[in-house]
Length: 506
Image (cartoon, rainbow, N blue to C red; front, side, top):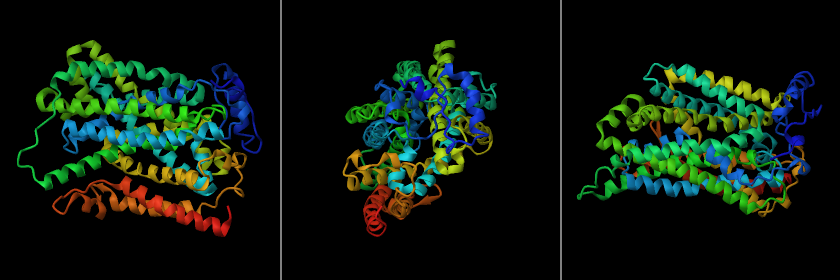
């Protein structure tokens, strides 16, 4: 773990902190230095301050963040929404999670090498102002997903107490618990995430053991299945795969935030592999269990009725009802697991907010966690009663943006930096004169977003490419927005960046 000088020491840079806001808050926080509150903001962590040596945290961090109800719920979508049988759902989950964990592991490697957080790393490919745009989007997405997680957890708590527990109280409880850890920062986040997933994982193992007798492959494929039917199944698998890939890959936007305190000489291969398997091994089992558990609604009418009434919380309750009080305790554990995901959302929000513009840098990181938590709690309370489905649908669409971020950072590193961190001047992280103008990144991002629109399949929009993949006889398109977005961005960025380098020379 980082030593006290990197997480607890109070260092005020007059160029970065507002003397009235920053200094007064930092002086107040100094009273709580025994709790190791991280007062450092988004500034680069210098080599001498990078003393975290617990490299296994690189994996355990993601084990905690992913062992949550929304991960389980995403697995349910295979059979419930996309009409895939259990076998097809399993294959889709495995393939797209194997792919989705790659960019997260790749971006994570930048943390120890640079001492920078993810949004600051993006300045070297997106430029100073391009990174500001990304940071604003990241703040928005962090709030939205934290609200979704809180609603899901609160709905599960409501099931525990037979619908008598107000959603508002559940959301507030989850918000307060999340704030407590994200407020103190890096060291406590790693402590919490290192262990929080263990009891939750045990709970899911119990769920699997209790419910396994009801799992089924679902209805067999009819003998007269036509080519059109198979094409429709492939379209549904691609759409479900996009969900799995998007959930996993979306962590790329903050992957370097949680290992920037590791020394420069930390093994890049270890960082990559630990991050990769930390994500894959936490996402995949829960999604597989989610898909398998939903098939139990085909054979157990109580499960089906519970799911139709209270969604995933009701399904949990029906599965664990035979365990009595112990089953309710497991439900509470599942509900509070949302905290483990909201913590990194708020911590990364606090870092991203400071990158939006110099004026936002004047506000200390800890204050952003308070403002962010208050904002998503209010959003969750309103959405839970009025537009939860709309919020969830909109947030799912916005996760497409992660592929544009990933492709540009990775292509810049591979094609223009020759896969070497020696070709970066990390001391210039805040010098806009030394950073790219970002024309190339922004233009290629626009092209990538056009590709996403052409390939996406949503209730309100089915792109022409999505329609073509699914076939003319299908009313629904195959959601290939991620794939087309990656292709369009990957082709356009080298062209635009080369033109930018030719004329601007930086």
